[in-house]
Length: 196
Image: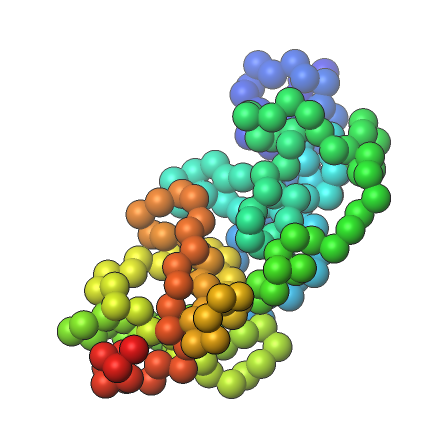
């Protein structure tokens, strides 16, 4: 009997018999406030190697990546990360070590949803909300062209060194890896941006 695995070649003989409801890759509906709780709360994909519960983020040009945590610093799942050979998961999919609070939760990162990116003559102001807070926040930067892919996850946290600075972690539109930028907090217009 031939293989019927999703995306397998016609002559594949991997002995996959199908029928598992999680056999297909998960769909990514974009980074929206309504659906973010589902992505952040628990793993929604299965590792194709060890069958552990993981997070999956689809790439813009096909493919994607499996992550152990859904947020900064975005640790790739060991089984699918070609740079590593050790997996923290056993053959049954259970972790070899006890699960602890995620690194990005300990560091204060929160999901952020951009409502508007305002381009100014001397910089950019980003308006958005956090996952559980409807109050709009305004972050400013002197960078003129801050390319943020708003369809992929975005996180923010207050800076540990300076009170009026926040750190914004996002995937740039022209790159595959997430970056972190420092922005001014409570920056409503161009005058306040100039005063900073």
